[in-house]
Structure formats: C-alpha cells, structure tokens
Length: 627
Image 1 (cartoon, rainbow, N blue to C red):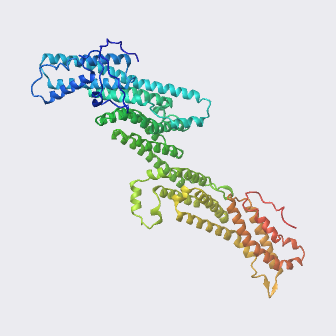
Image 2 (image 1 turned 60 degrees about the vertical axis):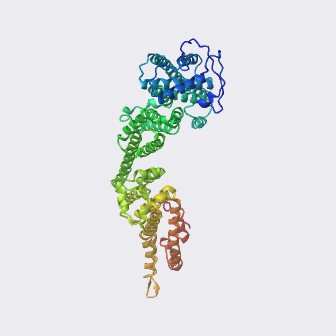
Image 3 (image 1 turned 90 degrees about the horizontal axis):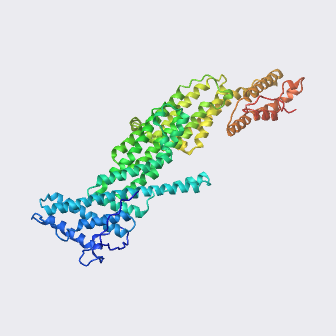
C-alpha cells in the first residue's frame, strides 16, 4: 500500500518508552514519563494531553460559556497534526510506544471535538480551534483507516505467501502428510503485534466517531480473505442451478466437496474469524459491532451453503441418497455451534435446512419400508438360497446403523412420541429408540415378504430351507453388528433364534419323517415271523426315498457353513442310528435270498457319506457308495 507524501515535521520529539505487557499505554504511564523536548518552554506530549484532559473535565463541570481555548490546549491540534505526519512516514506497528502515544493523542482530540460540538458555542476563537481540531481529526482518522486496511491486507498476503511456500515444500510428501498439516493450521494467521495494533486503531476510530468506516474496511478485507480461502478449496465450483440437472453420480462428488468445505468452515474458518473479530473489537462497548461484523461475514457464505442444501433436498428421492443426506444433516448440525455468536436468524435458517434434510431422510427410509412391502417378485430363488432382497435390506440397515444417533434424532417426531406414550413402560419395545422402532418395522416387513416368497416353493422342506437361510443371514448380520444388535434389543434376537429352530424342526419333519417311518418295525412280522416281501418293500421304499432326497437336496444351498454343518449333524444323528439298527436287525433276512443287492443298497457308512453331500448346491453323485 502506498503511503502519503511526508508532511513537515515539527520540532517536538516523542519520549519513547517500553511496555512490559505490550498493551495500550495508560494515561498514568504516560504521565510518569520524563519528556524530551527541543525547548524547555515547550510542553511535552504528556503534558499537553493532561492539559486537554483538564480542559474536557472543565467543560463538563463549568456553568459559564467558554469564550476561548486555554493556552495550554491551543497548540494541541498542531501537535497531533505533526504526529500524523510522522506516522504517515513511518507507519503504525513499528514502535509500540509511539503507537500508543499517537492513539492516545488522537483519542484526546476526538473527545475534545465531540465535546465542543455538543456545547454548540458561538465564540469565534473556540470555533476556530474546533475547525483546526476537526481537520486534524479527519486527517488522523483517514490515516488510521489506511493503516487498518494495510495491516489487514498485509497479514493476509503474508499468510497466502506462506501457504504457497508450504504447498511447494510439501509437493514431495504423500497425501496423508498434507492432510495432517491442514488439520494443524490456524486461520487467520495474524501475528500478535498486528492484532494489538489493529485493536488500538479500531478503538481510536470508533471513539472518534468513525465506526462505520472502520467496520467497512474490516468487512471488505475479511470478506476478500474469506473468498480466497473458499476458492482454494473449490467453493466457487459448486453451482446450485446444476443440482437438478446433473446425474446423481456427479452430484455425489459435489456433495462431498460441499461437506468438506462446510466442515472446514465449522472447524477452522468461522472460529478463526470469530477469534480475530473478538480480538480486534475486544471492548465490552464493541459487543454489538463484533456480532454485526461476524454475522455479516458468515451469513454471506452460509446462505450459499444452505441454497445448495435446499437444492439437493428437492432432487428425486431414492434409497441410495439416504447416506449423503445424513452426511449433510450432520454437517449442518456441526455448523450451528460455529455460528452461535451470530444473529439468531442465521441459526434458525441453518436449523430449518437441517430439518428439511432430516425429513427427506425419514421419507427415504420410509420408501425402503414400502419397497419391501410392495416387492411382489414371483420367481423363487434357486435352491432356497438367501434372497437378494434380504441381502440388500440387511446391508442397507447395517450401513444405516453407522448413523444410528443421527437417524434416532430425525425420527424423534411427534407421532412417534405419542405412540411411545401409549406403550407400557415395562414393554420391551418401550425401551427401544425411535430409530430402533423403525428398524423393527422394516424387519417385520421383510419377514412378511419372505414368508410370502417361501410359498413359491412347492416342496415344504425347501420352503423351510429358504426361511432358514434368510433367517440365519439376518441373525448373523445382527450379531455381527453391535449397532444393530443394540437397536433391535435382546428380545427380538431371542425371537429370531427361536424361529430358526422351528424352521429346522419343520425341515426335519417334512424330509425325514417318512424316511424314519420306513424303518418302523411295526408290520414287518406276520404271525411271529419276518415277512420278507414286507421287509423287501421297506428297503425298496427307503432306497427310493433316500435316493430322491440325496438327488434333490444336494442341489439345495445352505451358504452358512455353521448352519450347514448343524443340519448335516442333526440329520445324521436322526437317520444313521435308526438305519444301522434296522439294517443290523433285518439285513440277514435279505442276504439269504437272491438279488439281495437290489434291496439292501446302502451300508450304514454310505448314509453318512451321502448326508455330507446335502446342501452343497452341486449335482448329486453316487460314485462314493461303498462296496
């Protein structure tokens, strides 16, 4: 920034002194300084300011109208004017003692001008002094305004150059290293001495009645700095008008950028701006100014964030959008604390946008329920395997449970609360969260849909295998996710396990009940003797039934290895002892006749071998029969 041309310096020099705490010099400190002067007849700056203080005090206590300016105060405008000339040459921020003396002098002349204007005196000498003082005050305020903008912009440019240097030096680092550096950065990066000077200037300008000019300079500089920061992270690339037109795959990328930028504002930029604003306008009298400046800065940016959010909410709803909507919901929720020091209207706008995202998420989750209820697929899944609807639903719910706290928040609606009030407190469901109840509803819809789909299988045993496969898949997903298990509750998990055991029993009854009936000893003996025709028929029926079961159920699928093993073990425990007993008791009656192999087809060991073929989903092979 160019400086004004140097003005003629008056002969008086300022006493330079040091401050221990680098804060504004108080009047008492200046009063204790031993002044330097070129002439013993000349008052020091400290003495002149003391004279001005006495003058201002007398104006407020005197009842007589002022006719002329006291001799000790008369030269004060010229003294301040000389200080302005010196500061125009050297600039503020180079010597703290000089800065403090200059600011105190400007404060005195500003207070004098304001006090005399309030009195509205008719004295010509007073009016002449007031005009001179006002002129100097304007010149000082102009200098302060220029220095204020210069300090703000200089620190911004320095920060920008340092950032470019960091990027250059980090170009050989891996991406993760850069991320760590970004997390540790501070914004805005103003040195303490610059903030101290900015604070002094702001106080002086506001005291002199130039608050509007001071705030305008501050706001323009910080808006420009903020715009640069947002441009670096791609904020300018987000086009709200394109949201409704671009494919979802492309919009997902824009949403990811939006989330990254808003989170950066929440964690770095907004807190940094609030900290700077609080430091520069630190006086209790400046609270309203701080709030107005901070609100103006963050509002302009936040409204653009909310415009994008609102446009996304209006896009066509679909299940895959749920998680991006929840990400945006959480991002806005985290933004609220960062703008708490702004006007309440802005906070309400953020919360409103957050509510709309929450409502959209509830709608999308509701559409998942509807899609399960209305899935009318009439084609049975081959081999009784896990249905794609089951896999999709459970994987979807598992992912959704990563947002369980957020989903619980968005499902806290009045109808839900009314439903909860109507429940007994000792009811197990009463203890389940709002989102947990929605999960249970989805699971109930899925159970009902699977029950309908199981009827597509003509074989009751395959129907049971289908329900076992899907029930086991659901149960394993729940057990494998702490979030789902906690949401569903123990009662629901126990109920699911009980249902699986019932399906297992139903399968055994439908498949192996008739097989066991073949080995019933009832009716084999006639008049106390074994009837060979009856016995042969029993073996033939057993062979035929076992062949058919092996042929059919070897193609069935039980994908869960543990359940597959449990099924085989339970079948073996049911069938092999019964067959071994039947075989051992009656085989001798068949061996004594011709073509015994025609009737005794399997050894007990063969039965175990072929049971191990079941539920592999492979075509059957009888090649492993023992001879």
